[in-house]
Length: 270
Image 1 (tube, one colour):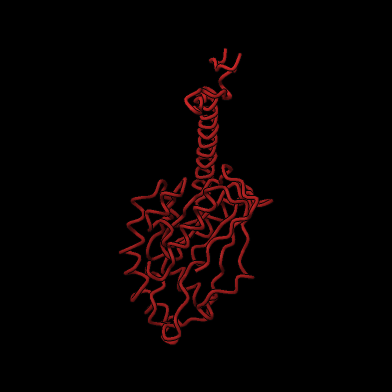
Image 2: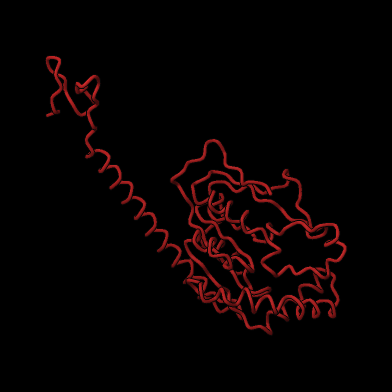
């Protein structure tokens, strides 16, 4: 497991607004992410998205030989500690982090030279079926969104996607859905809906919902910025108001920044 890389010139204090988006397989999460990025502006890296798929655990040789028996929809298939470490690094104001890349053909991590660099984003969108599963991740997110789509529509989308783009047979898609996808959704993914700040119905492209989400993001970001500014102002005022304590050397008070020495004696500063 690689530690997220933080550049030497990181600027703690300037932190991005971090959004977590979860929902079932083929629910439309990617469409929601792309719509938000288009609306909020992804130019010059203002808004970046990170897929939870990047954090799948590499399969052992035995698991790879029996890949049809591996449940990719179970939390155990992902490295949540690594996800948390990367998100916290971003939260601390890192100017750059590196996101690992997962090869679904070999079911292994690509070399670190293939990592994706994320540099000084204003908004980070972290998206995946289990993005809202771990409470530690939810604590990092400034906003959580659950994309809620009818179960039959999700199945139809998944069948279409896997047959047309992944060369799967109808029988294999249905078997995987019944064996792994639906049980994992019911046990681990659907309960996340209760923890989300926003639940977005997405049986079709919901442009109104996207506009409302983006307006909500703008409002929350403005509040966070104001709170941060107020906090820094109060902290600075307290630091200035706090008098420095005089030092004692051999039983005598020594002059400090808040004392003025006169005639070899220390007196309170006027």
